[in-house]
Image (cartoon, rainbow, N blue to C red; front, side, top):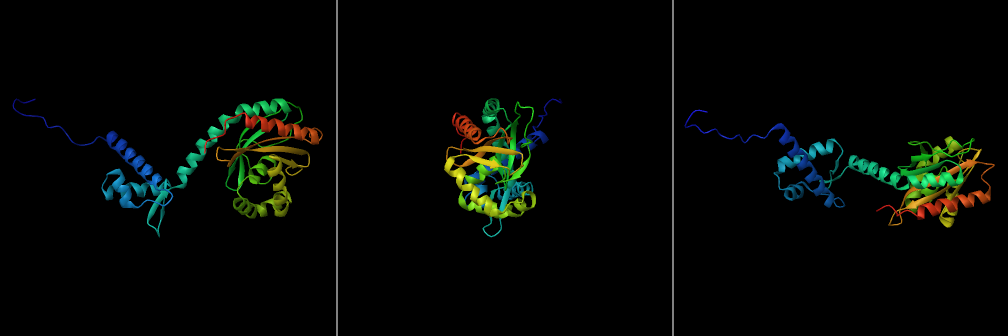
Length: 265
């Protein structure tokens, strides 16, 4: 360095630092919107909360909208959390519930000898997120992991549907009515009649609905608010699933669910 000259420090932000800064700003904006998610957050509210210039916040909001991390209400000019965030949250919940009840499924399958499934509601469907095969040589072809069925069809999906709020149940039945008839030859009024029994007994029976060769038993998993978040079911061939076996299976499933601390809200 030449004597008498002072090297000036650069105020430029490196690409790595700039990327980290953008991520932190995006996270701050998402947190700000989440605090006002029920009513929606306006641009000036968000800018004030994160202490950034309005044009900067607007640029970040535009990207978050494009990626569906936020949604925008044109009439109210407000931002809310978007579908992609809810999808990520659902994936996290899925892992949490599976981990929480995996051992329970193993015990149920071990005691009953038949395959056991863990199913969560997903739109108008039930989605299988875990499955433990049974020990019998002859097994029912039950739910596979990542397989979907319309809510109301099969023991787990019937248990899920039965314990949803009435308005939500009706919306789902109406939406699924064509699928009930097309794939299973079942009218929506039959599904409505099936709902009453699980709500009374706290478990469901699926007799020759998915297959003429099988009978299933399912029970709902409720969170700490009493909302249904999942269901456990077991299915076996007709000759094994006597009325006594169905009651015993229901007792086993309900006992296993009760032994686990309910999922959080």
